[in-house]
Amino acid sequence: MPLCQIRGLTHYFGGLRAVYDFNLDLEEGELIGLIGPNGAGKTTVFNLVCGVYRPTEGEIRFNGTDIVGLRPHQITALGIARTFQNIRLWGQRTVLDNIRIAQYARVRYGLLDAFFHTPRYWAEEKEILHRSLELLDLLDLKAYAYEQAQNLPYGLQRRVEIARALATQPRLLLLDEPAAGMNPAEIEDLLDLIHWIRDQFHLTIWVIEHQMRLIMSICERIKVLDFGETIAEGTPAEIQANPRVIQAYLGEEVA
Picture 1: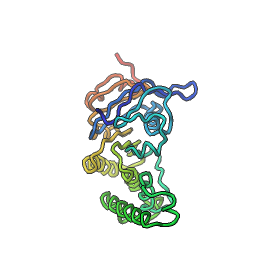
Picture 2: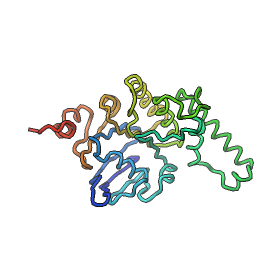
Picture 3: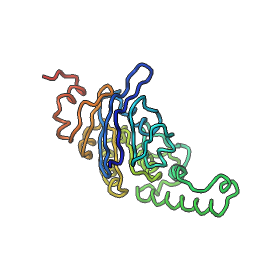
Picture 4: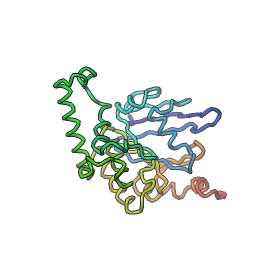
């Protein structure tokens, strides 16, 4: 069984159809791309999978569980994490705090433990701190642990956001335009980082991206949306040669 199965996913905003009949199987360990012109519905698909929106129609199953109608924190607890088009770190908190907070989706102690600072509370807080520092070390961020997130360069903020998503211990990681705003050197680092994360954490990764060099370099399969509909799916080579994809991006007539 695929890790994630999406069938007939359709969503309307009022009378506007944003996504229509979207279908996808995500296998364990795959690195999949989702591309399309601005406004094609890509981020809407991610928002539907993460529970930000409830689909008008369709089915989303993750690890055999129907997740349609679940709230975002419930979906996160099941093992789906994401980053955002626009960085959404807690800017005035430290880098370490951003990573620690992300782990509370899986915390095991209760409200009374937190209120009375029981031994169970302290034991788990110690675990959370240890895991957070270990994750920052793995992603070469430990030197910035006590810096406010907003003070970091843009490329490092992106890396912190990815670290925060990994702190939730996902099995499926959704990256929404991770290269947005990066310079060429930062994009090179990001290419290596995404491959390393997939192998190090044994994840399935699904990427939305406008940087075609990045998407063609890292993805094994790519799905293309235009006006909410799938117009192509295949390997990077097949997508690059597809006349419908060329038309969608360049507005050229297809013979």
